Length: 159
Image (cartoon, rainbow, N blue to C red; front, top):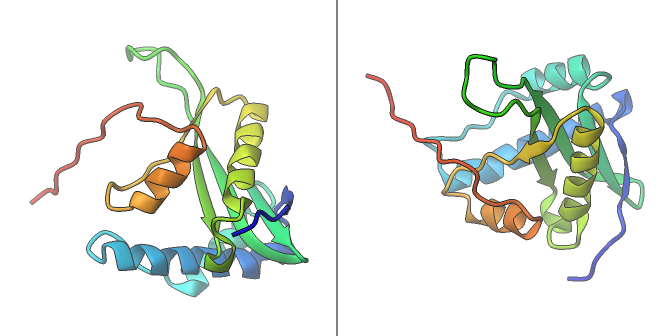
């Protein structure tokens, strides 16, 4: 596939329907990976969420030919408290979504670069991409964007 040059900009109120479409498409893709871990959220709940946060959240959108085809959301994390042993650095989670027809064309890479700039502009010195090991495509995508292992997160179901 050839590269496209998306227009990147902060998300606006008028983008809410596109953000909902992106979140739901991403959810459907993840449910196919592992329905025991992922779900498709209620569309009305997703719409309410984006209507509440779109003005204050750190969400960038990618447009191709006037259509929103991807988004990156930066979620700032608090620095570790003084009593912990980690060096206090502001971090941010980055969540990227690109519609299937636009994957592999540079849209996601452009969104990740934009998310890094947004995170840095808000005081973050490190960005995280939390990926469940079952999502090999996401691991490959973020690895190609320069992300690498930082820690191991172990989990166990309770009960």
